[in-house]
Image (tube, rainbow, N blue to C red):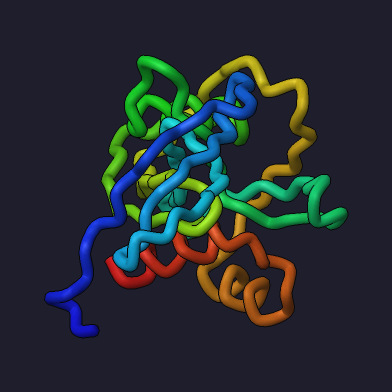
Length: 179
């Protein structure tokens, strides 16, 4: 089968299994080209935004936090989910303020990617934040964060030695480095 033969798989049904304030867990039934019916369970979100905040001296601002599912510390760029009625840019600005107490004079889109295309229908928009200023915002009570400023060489070293292992932050770094 060549690319020209690939067809969209028709959805037969969709069911909401569970919902919370951040996402929905859904179950779809769809049909394969040979007529076979299949099930697909996935997470639906409104999207997410990740920010690479860059100071005037070139250092980038990251956060270190404990990630429950992985049961380890994670070095990440500030980011989070888009909420109802919010644009990805609004979400980026909110996360920048909430997680690292910064505002961006300039917010430039670096690119978009799918964080985990087999499990979630999410699109993450990555922004570069420059002309940084101080901001105040209510921190998320569920997050305990340490703000860390790193040079580009230090970020690369953190990737090599495994301290920066978060896939979304790795994708954001790639978009930043190739911009």
